[in-house]
Amino acid sequence: MPMASFQAESEGVDVDIRGFLSQKSPFYQLADDGVSCTLCHQMLPDNFGKEESFSGNFVIDEKTIRPDRRIFGPFVPAMAQAMRNSAGYTPEEGKHVEKAELCAICHTLYTPFLDDSGNVAGKFPEQTPYLEWLNSQYSPDMPCQKCHCPRAQEQRYHQDRQTCPRDHRSSGMCLQEQMPGCLT
Ligand code: HEC
Ligand code: HEC
Ligand code: HEC
Image 1 (cartoon, rainbow, N blue to C red):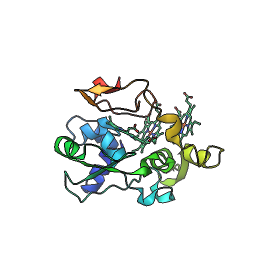
Image 2: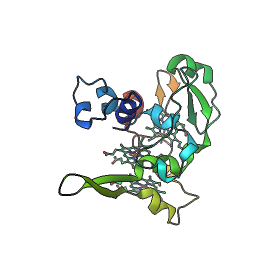
Image 3: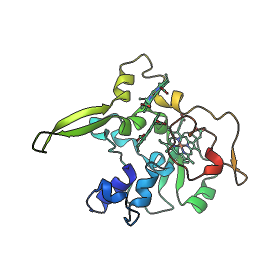
């Protein structure tokens, strides 16, 4: 529940994973969404690849107000104004979205474990595909995206506009189902 936890923390509210699951919680919707388009696409490369970025410690701009909030993709945007008007974000080319270090933020995951008295006794590496990749023959020329974000087999249109040129969902990466017409 990266979005719910992040939002709760930035509002100074206790992070309560079980509480998020109650429909009465103001964070329920964010918890249910998990990871959305705008989360991945807003991430800044400031801490990419650093240990402090792991376990979901992404950096996003929390100060800029919509529609000036920047949202990044691999291309120079063709219709920036249309996106500002309709989605409230300003698209910008950001080659950092093509880097393995973006995926590493959430997929290098250290989880605390408890001792017999219930105190945190340390952390264990729950997921480390980035560290494995770093030490494999695929690094650095074949980042995660090359395998996990393949091009869609056909062009996809949503309300007469091309919205998903990449097949995020069938590549097992996109957890967002807000655009069902597009992502099935
Ligand atoms: C888990 C992170 C993540 C999520 C969630 C995500 N994206 Fe992406 N998206 C990426 C990455 C990484 C790329 C760049 C892939 C590349 O260039 O290899 C990308 C590329 C794109 C592109 C550029 C298309 C292209 O041909 O490269 C568009 C448009 C896009 N995403 C839209 C969306 C939309 C809309 C959603 C929500 C339905 C979404 N993304 C959800 C990470 C994500
Ligand atoms: C904001 C955090 C976040 C980022 C960034 C992120 N992921 Fe994920 N990813 C998740 C979560 C959460 C899950 C779901 C884990 C679960 O099943 O409980 C997941 C699941 C996955 C899965 C398994 C999907 C399945 O069907 O089992 C793959 C593969 C994956 N991500 C690849 C990527 C790649 C590649 C990138 C970089 C382009 C990326 N992720 C970026 C959070 C993230
Ligand atoms: C050379 C292609 C390739 C690259 C590069 C690659 N992966 Fe994978 N990844 C795979 C394949 C194949 C699977 C296994 C799919 C299966 O077993 O169903 C997989 C599985 C996964 C899973 C799911 C594991 C599970 O338990 O379901 C995650 C998460 C993941 N990769 C993340 C990453 C991340 C993060 C990177 C970059 C640091 C990365 N991968 C780089 C091909 C790749």
